[in-house]
Image (cartoon, rainbow, N blue to C red; front, top):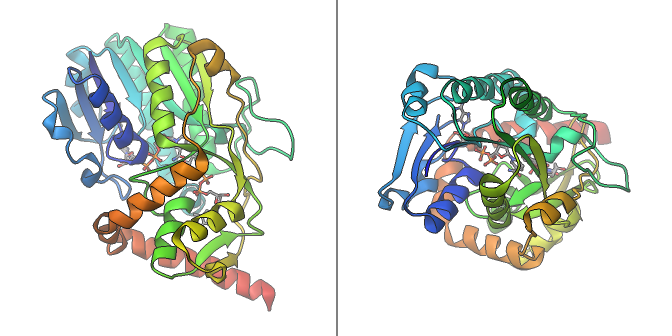
Length: 344
Ligand code: NAD
Ligand code: DAU
């Protein structure tokens, strides 16, 4: 099998490549990544041991650089590459359209031109918008994205499906809920809370901290993607999730308990603008159609993740000493100041 994976130096992409090459070591796999602030070659450590693994430093918008790899023939493209952080999309939305919409369109046109056999678009449950206290997102829920990030992902989904309908490109779309696990960039809630707790630093919780996310371990997500890639029906959307809804406050409290740290590290700060209140994903379609179900219990998966961050101090210290730190200071300081202004 010859596959091209984009965004494989990021969190989910690197976990997926490691999982997939372990299962199918004969695969030729080209990892295309621009190495933005979120891309990190340390995430791909060990992968060069596989004879078929190649890394290509490129933007998914760079047609010239990518074309020869498509022209050589591909069994599949898996598009993980994206600007993935909601807060950044609120501060600076343009690059979200550039990568998530234009970049996906570029890959779709290349795939169509060169007869790629399967195109797996990695989407998100955020395209469905926000839920009230009841119900769940199904694959039939209308697209109603609220953040610039979610809107850009919804745009990519619509383009991908248009390529299936118009040109017959064998497109599959997955929409997964919130992932956690090793190698997640520490701007996202779980790694940020773990690292701040280890360092005895405040953990910012937006608004009242009672927003609900539906958490899944990245290994369960990778297993689901394997099923969709190999057995999914082209032209189909599959939701992925572990039916594990928690408030952000519950998640952070669990992390503090696991690390034996005090609750006073929690700081309630100004809310994220347009903050989606609740996500919850129905997964009957992938269970019935492809026989997939999440296997990792949240408490056990979170304990394993906390342990990983405790052992991989060098990995995250390198990130904290660079660009991330500046972003974090700016973002957190701004939100904290805003909240304090409101309280006065
Ligand atoms: P991430 O931010 O950790 O990684 C994104 C990767 O894409 C990075 O390696 C980055 O360098 C690369 N990239 C960015 N722009 C690029 C470009 N123009 N060309 C080539 N490479 C580029 O993201 P993640 O959390 O691993 O998410 C991966 C995918 O999964 C995204 O499409 C995201 O929307 C989707 N998703 C994420 C979650 C989650 O909880 N993290 C849940 C559902 C879906
Ligand atoms: O649902 C899938 C999506 O999950 C993915 O598509 C996105 O790529 C991924 O970033 C994630 O989006 P969220 O916005 O849900 O994740 P984040 O970790 O940024 O935030 C999780 C919740 O925690 C959310 O309600 C906002 C809140 N939060 C986040 C941060 C970073 C805080 O309260 N404090 C924080 O410092």
